[in-house]
Picture 1 (tube, rainbow, N blue to C red):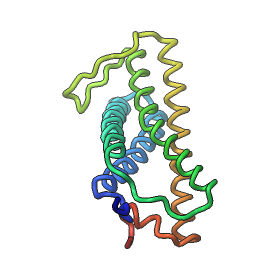
Picture 2 (cartoon, one colour; picture 1 turned 30 degrees about the vertical axis):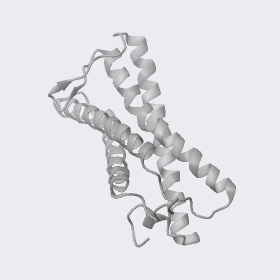
Picture 3 (cartoon, helix red, strand yellow; picture 1 turned 90 degrees about the vertical axis):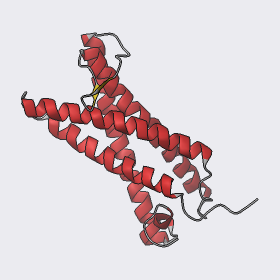
Length: 179
């Protein structure tokens, strides 16, 4: 049995950073667009937000598939509680990578607003049109999005702690610096 690589694969690194940028961008657009008055600009941002959500959902599926078929580097030496916390955080992140866009898609479906990916590919509605259901999914989408934002902040904080305090090379595994 060979020793696992000290770094993630280039594909895993690319998927990590694409998702990171996409999640931050989609969250920022989501916050901004909800504060706008009804206008063509607001409608355009809602469509962009939905396109980003579908794209992030597809990237998440690709990332999960990659992760299930490619062994990650060995865990860094750390206390057992930190390793358990890291694994739990990654599990919750993956769960929310799917839950946030799916709740948003369900919200759009229930509200009667179709999702047409990049204005070209109409996606099916997977819940019936229902105003009360739309409000429930809207609340769920927002709660999941804020939860994801908090987990992302905790994830970044933990990575920075490993880099600046532990100095254990954790960031280099994700393509930042030397492994």
